[in-house]
Image (cartoon, rainbow, N blue to C red; front, side, top):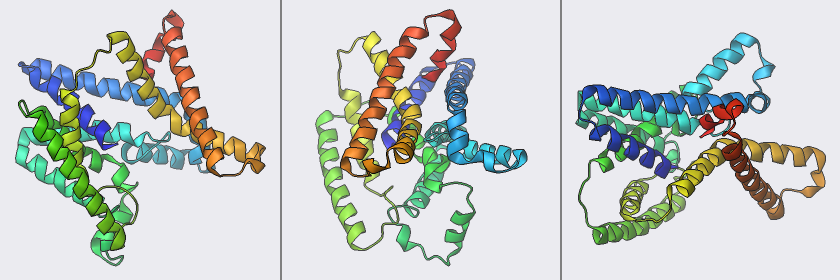
Length: 301
């Protein structure tokens, strides 16, 4: 997930910084916000029946359900896994706004939020349950590390990478190797000391992701535009659709074929069935969107 955040931020700020006129910069922001909201609301509508069932929005009054939807829209997930879309949008726009005030301030806030996310995941057991910070986390209306605070940090990382013009590939490879080694050591230390609350974010994840993205920037590919666009469509549809499809498949199996169990074969079946469904839907969308009645399908990716 960090790589998706960083690459999205890197692409946005690379295009944003390439604009010389203030009007062009504003237009770039508007296009970014519009595309992300179109993607979000398209999938929100398409998956609404499943989302209402999964989230249990129907179990309360209309007023309470609307408040829950708005809360999940801003701070968490409406349809499953949608938290990334809003966290990415808010993260980039917040960093953009903070950077206009003071770039160092943006960095300080981003790092502070990342430390808070570490205290809710890999270093979660460091925080006493009676502490004020722990109670503050409990008041947050969603899962803190699956919301816009983590998007702010990775958006800042992507912005800084977009500002790097020259670097040596061999140094990047060496840095990546050392960072991975230190990440393994850190992870083993976290487990041995009993610091882990839930798998999530730790110190060495940051340099690993930075060096990995820098290395990806250096890779030259021969994929033509047609196939690269299909892969982009496929990856977007898989992300937006796969968790809901997987959940519904599991629920169907549990209700209809309970004897199927929950072992390795069960999870492999759900995984590959979900991947196949997403690929078929992507192929169908790429074909059907050519017809005038279905041009709206372009908003699915």
